[in-house]
Image 1 (cartoon, rainbow, N blue to C red):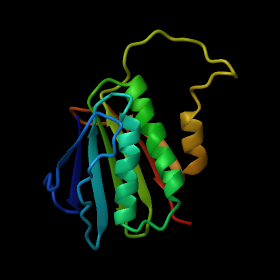
Image 2: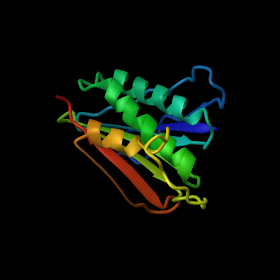
Image 3: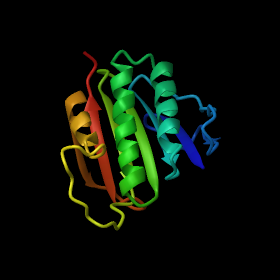
Length: 163
């Protein structure tokens, strides 16, 4: 199951938890708390096919609650790409985080357990997969991947600015 965690900036509590069903039905979403400084929400993700849709629903609800002035469709596409990569290529656990700063910069991060073991297959120009980070690069002000603390091993992040 996936769990949503929302918190006001400056608190470290799992204030508003709610469980999402593992089906493709619309999922209830906990309120996304805000403060004068920033807005933050996080979602623990089970590595199933439904995860991407649940993450988009969670992100859309948070951005709507926050009246995010930026391009919501681009933000949802970036969330989709980062979560899909984690589900397809990483070991569990997976957590997605959204942070909306007071300057309306949106920071997205997906934490995961690191790369899963898999056989390397060469990529061809006609592959239907493998372009996710190219899409992320085109839509964001910046993106990257770095190490994360336990229980995660890596963090993939992207920053979008409201234009």
